[in-house]
Image (tube, rainbow, N blue to C red):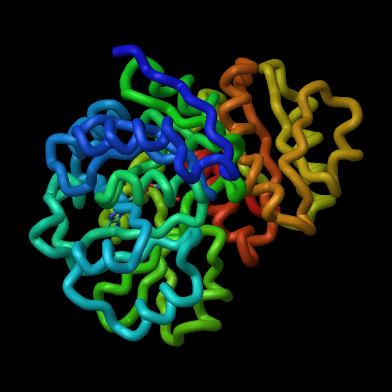
Length: 346
Ligand code: TXA
Ligand code: MG
């Protein structure tokens, strides 16, 4: 299959002919990768079971890992779900459109191929204008997981999508770099008490400000057999290199990484921060993830760096841990998975 690749800027996505054609592909059961504010999504008609199935085969994704249905209006939400509680209403009012996915009990119209066999459906209204217009043109909710091959870091640019899916899907819309760089926060609002299933840019603190009594169920570990978001149990974001995450006080972290790296004969990469990069002057491959003071900058760069480490042919990565506060919690969640929970605290 040849994949059509088209650039569309967010300022140019209204009445856009290419976007209308992309919507037509979705309506007729095809696959289109598109930008969102979190990461790129691989879209298909969420109400078409055959189209959803194509997503799983293009990504090599296990079929019990459900997809997120992306919507452009609350009317579209009504077609997918039975009702919503007060928590859901408050979260929608405060954070949609934006990087928050909510889990509801589904109506029959949503096929089990989209929900991985579950009776609930994950829904998100993205804020990215190109994504919103694409959904609006298509007139159907768009099921979209991250547009990477299963197991790889989520794509934050069209180049990442091209690398993984070129030749396997109908179209890729290049809308530049994703603003957030990490996937959406997921909150299960299908029961009275809200459960946070995946940390993201909408932080626990922000959610607690709007609704009370949430539980945090994001701490999946390799032995957590039945995480509530099925996708959390799969191997994720893993670079080809062996990776170690070092946590603690920044100065101690740097000392530990220096001593470990000094004894390395393998091709080594250090993933440092603005605040600590000066400690590693004697080392060759030192990449700055971003600033500890602005964890959003680390969130934005992280997946690209993990992908670049493969391209560079790194054999071992020593990465600095950051404080798991605010969006730092989501950064640490992804770093922990990337290293397969190979973590030391000093
Ligand atoms: O930011 C994002 O969320 C991106 C963009 C494209 O919107 N999408 C994304 O999708 O990250 P994906 O498929 O890579 O991750 C969706 C996660 C998976 O861990 C999946 O198991 C979980 O959401 N999920 C989906 N439906 C669910 C449900 N009904 N109950 C529990 N977890 C669900
Ligand atoms: Mg994904």
